[in-house]
Length: 357
Ligand code: GAR
Figure (spheres, rainbow, N blue to C red):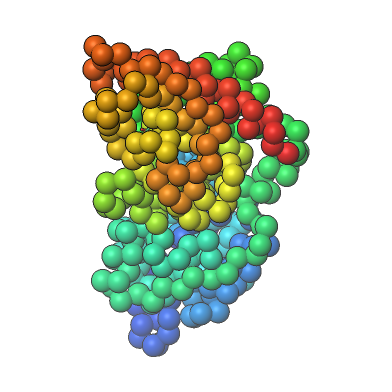
């Protein structure tokens, strides 16, 4: 029988007690640690140096699949644990099943909890942060080695260099008729790229069904407890991590009803498009079709624009006009605007993809 390098929570608890008796400190970190690189090695050495023993909690294989997509992990939990235990800095490796490390933090109650420098104390998951604060655990954010990440390593190994098909993420919150039009264009070669993921912040809505029909990976983003229209720092970080892991080149919002902000805007500067059902700058924000009808205007339309920090304020790339008829209702006008959207959005996306390095 091969030796297991995965420790039980009981073994860690015994170490915890021993360290407490000796007034020494236990450090905990968690992550996937799939394909180890120098960034991991230095990070773990730095974490270990903060205390007297280091426990690494790794995601189970099922939770890695859920977080990173079906192709991951490359190495099983048993293999990852064995690799980690070969490092001088690592004293124990435990495996946790959930997406979040809350239970393992609660069970281990470390003195110090560390995360990599792509986090800030505010971008830790709300639940994890609340627990760490309640337990009085010191949170330390450690610097990472620039350019070293598992996703970058895997992309390099896969020989992915500029010239491969460009990869698009569609973000939506609703029925997904525009997602359907974009996916159709990708399928018949009009888009000049492929759809890598459909991201949605509302469980069970139509856009997820559209993604499933087209066999495209889906990410249901937990928007957290932020007020309507916003994403928590943790949700935003998860989104950015996933887009990077999936090597997304262009983000297209198709009815995504939450405001995007830093660090995403900077990471994808000039590479985030939005579609809005009015002739911007007229009627930005919510209910633009009803506002167009109420305005008494004889025409409205749709706009594709770049996303900046404002609401529907970025550079306009294309507009199409739609006449408003005296008999129009919000539904009938929305339907004709949708027809225009389905025509222009895939075309503008194709132009942007063609213009990318
Ligand atoms: C589209 O009409 C899009 O212009 C609008 O949401 C609809 C999504 O429909 N976007 C906004 O209002 C953004 N502020 P779909 O889910 O059927 O593509």
